[in-house]
Length: 301
Image (cartoon, rainbow, N blue to C red; front, top):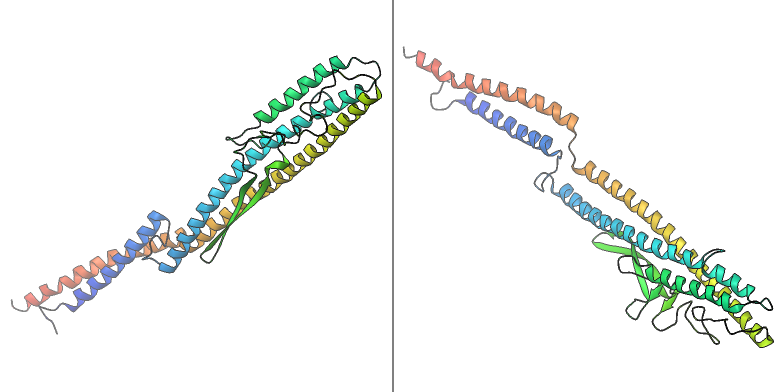
């Protein structure tokens, strides 16, 4: 039946054209954003997962920044400890050799003490300068925390986030403290490494015993500082490994998010070409269907 009021062909063509236009709009949106799940309306489950994973990646980025800051701090303290240990020309190593030299009978210990004093001052200056971002573990005061936690990782199981950290005990590296309880300023016997003075000592048996005590004190300090430097070296290595792992983990999370929400551009480009052709054919079909009413007019001529 030919009807003037109800054009079934036009209605079908219009419905098809609307469907094609909707699909074309979706494809164009995917191409322009690069995502097939850009909003919760596209796929609520995937969008929710991707949003949570992006939040986790932001936390991992913060961990990476924290590890970088921690690495710089540890490296500063490690460098200073190595400087305090010194070599044949400086630091505790040189101090030990000077004390052994002072055991020589008839030697001018006043001149040796002049060099010892310079080494003592230099070690204290090095410890005081070992500061990064206001943090100094070698020369501490009452406000310095006893332990420091260096954030090393972040993970989330379900809705429960977990952070891990590397705990550093500051006393293991403190050379000087405001309460004179550090490795180099703690007084045992009659002096500390920082305050020992051999200028007035003689070749007497008693003074030679004092010298032996000083040598033992410096030797013990070398062992303690070496142990502290070794610990910091191990922490440096651990931070470096964690930093590399966090960066790799962030890349993995990015790839996971991409697999959930990224659009396949090869597929979308093919779909776009097909839909554009369908849209053009739909417009032509609708035009043909609309012209059907003209054939009804010819019946009354």
